[in-house]
Length: 221
Image (cartoon, rainbow, N blue to C red; front, side, top):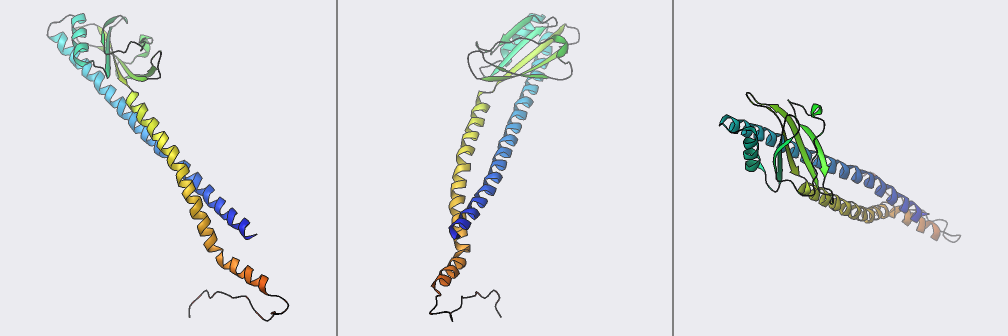
């Protein structure tokens, strides 16, 4: 009977703690992921604006639209950042930094805003690597319309999120095992007086009916 009560108390304690740990772990992951995604989007927006400024400066220096696009792409593209510039009809003028496995297709031009950035997350063809793309149409004074596309690789962020998931998957069970031992110890300690009284009650027989069970003093005078 006592062992059953002890097991139930331990199970209840571990169950409550498990629910709390799962909720906390999910919140940690969601909040961290949101913060990281927001940081990536902010960087993409900033990159798009820098590309637009660079393109406008190159045009003001007298370069034609194709040379200006190539100059901007050459300046801003890298292994971690893809830049592509299209003309107003969707024809590519220049691109750089795009992985060979990444297929880039513009959506309908009418869906690309002029005063904001349209985001897309795309996967490489033969890999799970993701890229975060930002697209914006722009009309530069005295020049044709353009579509500026900037992409940021998500491999580092996805690796960090996967590591966080693994760490949480390890931490939660370990914490529950520790909580189980702790709960069993606390239940055993809290029921120790009940166990003592039960043992004493079993010892009282026909020859020692005058004995009484010990009653713990709850209050000090």
